[in-house]
Image (cartoon, rainbow, N blue to C red):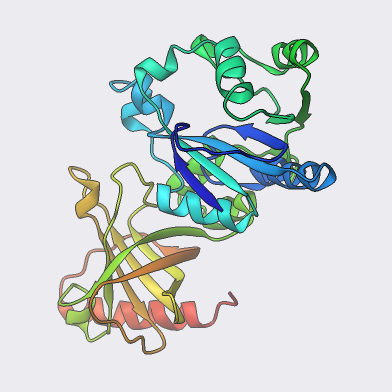
Length: 309
């Protein structure tokens, strides 16, 4: 997958099949769009193009209200990896600014999708809006398609357990600690990726080998405090694990995310890991003695080992 930061460096793209959006989560609904993109590109000997935004538009447009509190399912690194795995040929990451937000839907189609990318086909999700004040939608694209000679296709919303999948619903499930529900919508285990280090921490002091995961973005969603059944993965290693979370509400980047792998992991120097979440085992608890804390962790480990994941 070729990655471009903005449109200036984008070269010739063969028969571009394009979609655009934030794609936070790259969930079941997003995957339906991406699969259709791949199919259409194969039919016309073309290339897929996904235009996404960083930071998230709400962070820029509403920095003091809904944007301030918005927590995202994926960091940029995670989103890139998921889109690569989905088979995208070209990813264009747009630095979303107030100036960019003022581009009208017509200008976006004419100056970017057509003049820069020469789009042959455009695929969007249901109820998708774009351009200044969200003026653009499927109907306006359909009209412009007839005028300029490109095809437009709208992908219907996807349902899981008779409930429409959306990034907002996934965020809510994660914030409630309902990991299985979030994972069903995502079609993969919720993840937190970042640098890891071994060292002294609350779990290692109780006699459990452990690693701390460091957050890369303060807008990345962290599930509620407690103990989780997880899998920890590095470039060459993987282990079932137990993860302890204690959020720092004043500075999420300083939150404690401590993982005890059940198998020995060799970690030295600069390593990045991915934590895959399967189930929230319990809430955070208070203990009067260090020995009580250790006994509870031992019980947590036994209960996690009995799970199938």
